[in-house]
Amino acid sequence: MQGGLGHGELKQNVLRCIITRWVRQSAHNDRMKLCTFWKLCCWALWAWLAVWPARAELADTVMRVKPAMVLVGSFKATETPRFAFRGSGFVVTDAGSVLGNRVVTSAHVLVPAAERDPQAQLVVQVRAPDGNWQMRGARVLAQDQVHDLALLHLDGSAVSALTVGDSARVREGDGLAFTGFPIGGALGFAPVTHRATVSAITVAALPSPTSRQLNTLAIRSLRGDGAFDIFQLDATAYPGNSGGPLFDVDNGEVLGVVNMVLLKSTREAALSQPSGISYAVPSHWVRELLSNHPPSAGSTPAPPH
Image (tube, rainbow, N blue to C red):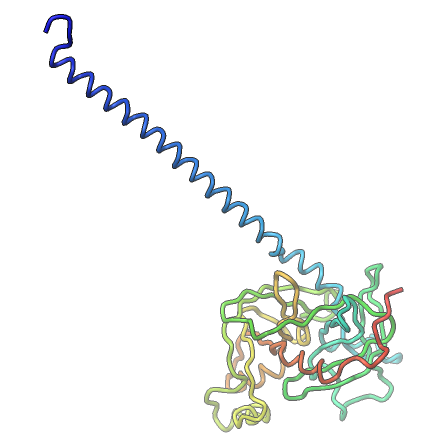
């Protein structure tokens, strides 16, 4: 064809146009895909930032828990040392305040009535604003022998306190933490915190002990008198930890009370060499104890001096 395109050139031009259009369309699609990708990234980042502030670091939570920790023991002027440490405890909130005068600990931390020295006084040591331990008088408000819990009243001004949460939301596999005084004053009284996974939620009863290995607590548990669920933890605690709080690592809410005497003697009475497993009484029983013994009318915690 004179002055026109040959058949081969026409085919090349058509092919070139098709390829060019395909490249442009692909580039457009890629830009759309990239734009969509970045939008998704932005939404994901926004969602993460929205949730992140609600999840505190354990270090931040420990700083809130430590001021509420107390030493429970007895004081006798003629003894050396005059203060005899018996276990850990923690102050709980009263009337919606962040302060409190009521202390929760394990009942076995208290001196049994039959062994009580009339010259020795029940005392609780709290951390003063200057960082030193301050001794306060205390009195027993109530005891729950079945769940090995005790509620004390702390003399003097109110101190930092913890909120008791709902242990019903605790599941096996949850990561929690507990604070206490595991070795008493051997190296100075300093609260120690450990992470702990809830390995099992199980009944406070023995599986199959022999008659020679049963003790009173184990027999009572096997008969069903006061049988209740407990938290079995994968962290090692010591007798000094008894009475200390097991708490949520995000908000510091108390979800249990560490118990290294009553529960171990019940769960492990059949073992010749007890394990390093730790136990805690669910906070449900703490809340019940608190509700059954509310603060007296007009006893709203006074602010610290």
